[in-house]
Image (cartoon, rainbow, N blue to C red; front, side):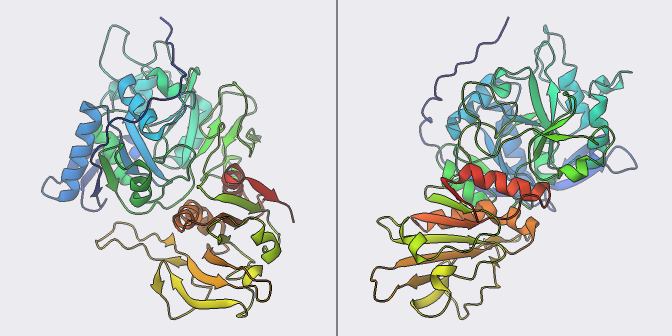
Length: 474
């Protein structure tokens, strides 16, 4: 029987829940035992959880909730924080849509912890069997014909676990909840490299459908605090493993078409894909603007407005000069406040404040008085009063007041520098947009970069163009 998906707007979130942030360190959650001398997650592995530590207890609690309830769990991956639920149960997947207020025709990526678990999805039990495919069905991988298409083998060996999602045909009968695929006959799958994410999937013994753990259309979360800000009261557990390292979502590829295509730019560059057998002629098949109309998106992130803070975002393409006062004041609202995201050339306070003239008041960093205005100090250390498995940094803003002099008026300036390296820009982008949004600015001016510098640069500009209301050329 064909599945019918309700395309009406998702229902209002359930009564507010008590949301807890539970810290979990990858170094204290337990011991990983690999099944092969290669010590590869691809070849199978087990986890001995340290139940004596709070980290192990938190992980077991989250895995139990994934198995036994319909309330999704937020957890960190190497890209962004995800909001996971059992991909085989409709009621659980519907919990994701309720929490995010996400349209139901936007497909979800399925996260797995081993190739055996993926093969169990592609070769599901008979329709008369109600058991959900799990990581334990490794005997199914012994078939002489690998259900994973050969075109993906070179990518899997090089990039998994990691920020790469592959598009696969949905088997019949489908083991996945229909809400996962948005009525498509394909689904996206990836194996994250973050040990905490892999451990959660392993302990839940379920493939996890997991979009980013933000309110729909908002910037993707790269810290547990970002998730709490968006989803407080809508979910119960946020596993806090520290800031994410990559900062933009996974690359999504389609090897089922000829030539193979990149559907969404992300953490793996097209130049690296072309080094793999069968992917020498891979093409770009995405647009930087959101897909319009009733056509179902082939992959997540292709439809609807994405990555947008409350403030207006004005993107100045790579090579553009910083905005001056005449440009800035035309975007000011009642708060008379401007945010700046700087990458390579803009000065500490852009063209509005290129000297000490017009600046009043002390420079501050996130509200704390600073003894220096040195704009080369771009990223502040992420502090939360406890030991972290990761020491990744998140951006912080510098404050000043701009007074144009005889013209009167003026505005508050909040400025964030991400540095000149593409990896640093990708890592800090979403955090910078969120940080400036929390400063309640009217507009955020973003210094773009050239998207021909590789796939990560293309991913950065793809996200920015989806977030921007205005795009200014140099």
